[in-house]
Amino acid sequence: MKSDEIAAIVLKAREAQKTWAVYSPGERSMCLKKAGLYISSRLDEIVRIIHEDTGKLPLDALSAEVLPAIMALGYYRKRFKRFLASRPIPGGSLLMVNKKSRMVYEPYGVIGIISPWNYPFSIPFSEVIMALLAGNAVLLKTASVTSNVGNAIKAVFEAADLPRGLFNYIEMPGPEAGPAFIGKDGTGVDKLFFTGSTATGRELMALAAPRLLPLVLELGGADAAIIREDADLDRCAAGMVWAAFSNAGQACAGVQRILVHKKAYDAFLEKFCTLVKGLRRGIDLGKMVTLKQKQTLSRQIENCLKQGAVIAAKSEGAFYQDDESLDAPALVLTGIKAGMPVMDEELFGPVAAVIPVEDDEEALRIANGSSYGLTGSVWSKNRGRARALAERINAGAIMINDHLMSHGLAETPWGGFGDSGLGRTHGELGFKEMVKAKVIVDDVLPGVKRNLFWQPYSEKVYDGIRALADLVSGKALSSLPKVMGIFFRYWER
Image (cartoon, rainbow, N blue to C red; front, side, top):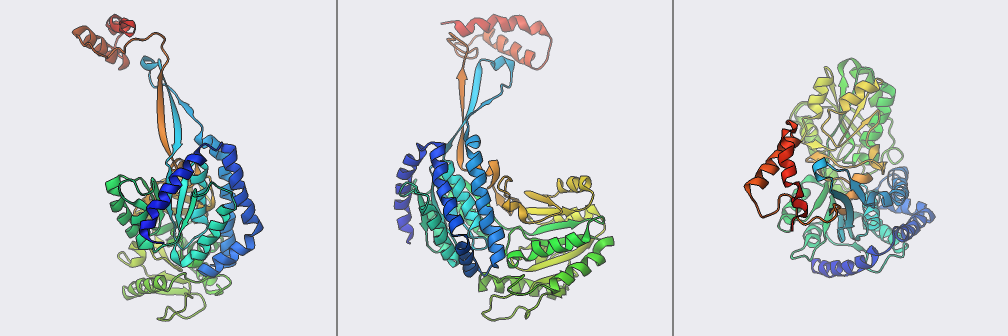
């Protein structure tokens, strides 16, 4: 599809959205129930498509893509009416007791979604569901290398019997999609959701600035896991294998820096390395999605090794080679120093660094030393201390005695700080990103002709308002007579 075709698609989507906006919540929910039934009836086929498009292991495709999508659909269908419900706002002052305020929510219109290749089904699916339930039309562009998954998503929503033109699946080169979706002079979408690299996120912000187009950006990560001295090291080792090497490490929220208390370091490293050496290619460890990403990762690893890092463990398979293979072994790096790519950059692949730390404070310093702030974790038997430590990690989602899985919890907001992006997806906060918030303020005092502070002005009015300020700030009731002196202005003609 060419860029100049997008404007016409957006116009048609706007018309379809007007029809969709008058559907009752129940009617919207029933349409999307059909999407869920379609997934259930073709679950194994969708898993196969994800596996073939990405090299992701079938179990990863099922547990980290299709199952979370099904769970998310059920969650949002159950909760979205409450998320969209108008609600009263409690008054803030007795002086304004005559003002009653309510929050109301309305759809943006047309939501644009540009999704990545690493989780090509689950990431866009939740966003599409939220956008549609909120009353929007959708333009979805998936990564070109996972276009078969994109077409599978298209088939899911075609089964939902949506108004024609409401959901639009777009196939076009990635560099063209951002400018085309953003558009000019109102020809683009009304809000854009992007998941991908930090560099591309910055480019989209610059493109969106002239329109003041709102964006939600879910970008990179270089997550840290803090393993305290009192942690269950067997669980830690098993959890770190999954968090670092699930989806061949191609997860923005996968663990990259494992910060282990020095007293637990040797025991943890031995357990962790033993598990990593036992990973089986094609059974426990999938493929990289693109050769370009494998080559980028290879250069980053080589830079770490040149600066003194050591490979403490490697799963089966040859080390990174200049070939066409998408296989890549899982690596454990030690001897880590500041300035290495594994400390400062996002390594998007099966690599994890294990770093000894003196105490919680050093672990926090290293964890928070990254420009990224997507997720993190704390591993400890002392949940109270773990929670206190988690609150001090500069990241959008922190897990205790687990890692990476919170993206699968539809009820929890998803998003990060700093170079990891802005805005949220998932949960109520993420759903509210799909709507515009509006406040309606009503005056309920009967017969009012004017407010106290309306013209005509006079010294008496100034003194009365000044007395009101004294009264609100807690000064003596001596201000009350002057307040009463202007009170009847409400009913003056």
